Length: 190
Image 1 (tube, rainbow, N blue to C red):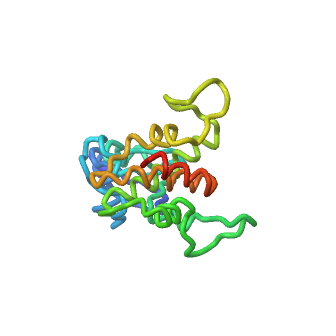
Image 2 (cartoon, rainbow, N blue to C red):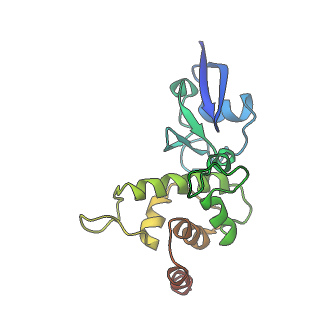
């Protein structure tokens, strides 16, 4: 059975007809040519296909495209287009702070998982900013963006190259960790 849907992908409204069994990942990659979400495991276990839908992290390999009719989907490609400066001005071509942090902290090796890692980090930092606890959040107060908190929030994204130390540092930098905190991270990581 086929259905026509409209999805706003990286700020651009896209209309397409999809089979009701088509995943969002396949619709993005095969039908729309958006290749930053990667097909890793295709079972929702690696996070390489992570995108934002309505601002929330979703695994596009497990999400049916028809459920995204009318949704706003952001991929790693669209993050830079959605950057807003401190003054509220749109900054064309600027990298998103998380993308910049991944480059600054050398938080990737082969790069295959990087788009999913970056998008997941954006979602995780948004959840953190809203004060949502994770499994390792201590007490009833607002969570602290320490190494354990970042590692827990990013645990659904696998990196076969094992760039985890730098990924955690990059997420903390994007979340506002000071250079002193980052230096302590590097010493702690050994």
